[in-house]
Image (tube, rainbow, N blue to C red; front, side):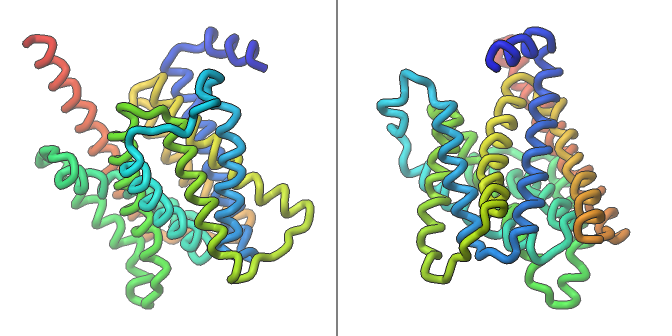
Amino acid sequence: MNKINLQIIHMLSKNQLGFLYMFMSICAFSLMDVIVKWSVDYPIGQVLFFRGFFGIIFYFFVIPKDRLHNFYKTKRPGLHALRCISGLIALVAIFIALRKLPLATVVSISFAAPIFTTIFSIFLLSEKVGIYRWLAVLIGFVGIIIITEPGISDLNIYYFFPIIFCLGLSYVAIAIRQLSSTEPVWLISFYFSLSITLLSFLTIPQGWVMPSINHLIILSLIGIFGGVANLWLSQSYKYSEVSLVTPLKYLALVFAIIFGYFIWEEIPTIKTLIGAFLVIISTLIIFRREIYNKKIITSKTVND
């Protein structure tokens, strides 16, 4: 299997590899979302267990052999804790949203995470945000309002959960950016999967349901898909520029519309599609400006 992987790596350029890993990541995340939405007969805490526990098992296969004896060691436990807490808030919120709202609606709102990351970066990373990114933030918020307007008018609180997910994920992005300067990706992901598993145990008194063998296999795929999706996402950014592979993320909306229609007979409204379009445009502007600013900084450094 490793020989096949090496042959594929040698055959493809770095950008092509980045596209391939991003596409596989999107497919895995989309399948995980479908299973979470399907698992409505099982308590959220129990579903979290499968996401965390089988994610932990997966990461033991990617830990370098020379780190097996001390893989858990870290110099930044506090930042890991903050990353895990914000990630747990985001995960619980998105799990609730997936069960209560149309799949395409949840995915559309979740695209807004970079908008909140931009705002948080001002206060947490002291980054300067120019007029283009502020315009992108404004466009994104208009998109969110258009998508959530039916929920707000009908007092459907579940429309707030994808927004809570975006807030949590936004801080996760900043925390990972800080952690990745000293910590390997697999360790960051391992601690998150461990925190999910520990949180799930606290929900056992609420009553877990004994799954059948078939359901057990399907539920375990939540953790496996989540684990490989995160790893493939990191690999995508490793081999290719963010600006090149990021637009592929929006294939998730196409998958959500297809799965939602054929499995749950969900048809996205015109408002959802218009709002999703605005959110996508805003995040693309943000990504393009980040890449542009990095190039400016790099060129100044070289010239200096």
